[in-house]
Image (tube, rainbow, N blue to C red; front, side):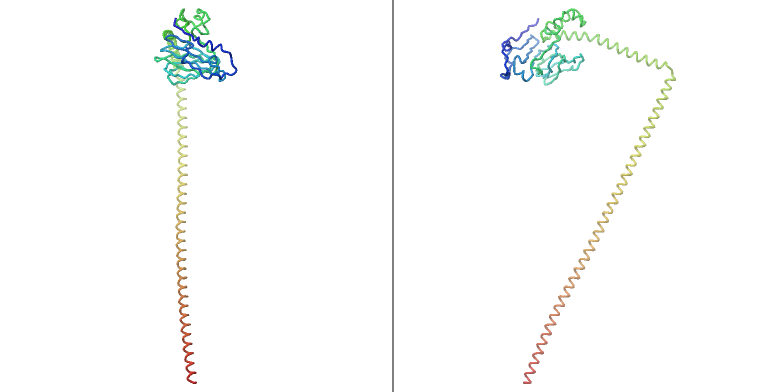
Length: 350
């Protein structure tokens, strides 16, 4: 029997009086404590629930840390009152999960960094790889109820071995080989026995699968022969029907292509019409711009001619004013000369 060590260091913590204020302790370290279960060449199992850390009762969570050695196996189990969130912290291996109806929902290899969610009542099995497997499991209950399906803590442990052998149709003594006396964790020897049993069970399964496949092939062959013996008329009728269906299909396809071509032609005509309208509009705009430019030039010519006439009229008026001033000055000088002559004549008479 493998060496098993139980954690007795927490008996005092389990006996501590309940307190109405559970947040007195917020931290719990598993580094300096013995694990709850230790199996030589198998691994360790440590659970931190509200019994060890009372403050978990308020937040409603608990934690399980499992470390499996090389090729070790954790007993298949399910949790009745909590969902599981598993995070692989080191190593790798394989995890199998089935639904409550026994249908496989997950069966894959996992490695460091993988996160896996397992609902309540879903049994799961963890098998370590060559480098071992270590993971942390967060459960949505401060006091989870974990039920094992194999090992010393199994729900079937109290059932007589002969009853189990008859119920599961296994040979006498095979249950002991599968680790009936193990505790939570099966070392590599027991897990190897479990794998050997799985390999032995694969042969009859493969044989049944091949027989069923051969029977199905035989049924299909018989159906084909029966159809061939029912007569050529049925084949000919079916062939004619297939040909008529093919002709209808080709006609429909031709009609569809014709409609598509018509639609494309109409689209092209509409596009060409839009292009012509656009070109005409552009031409009208260009003609309008030319007419506007011509009118503008004509107006500018009128304006220049008007300005020239105005300038000439102004110059003519200036010349006329100058001539008028000259005439006035000449008349004034003539009057003055006449006045001088008149005075001179008067002076001579006197």
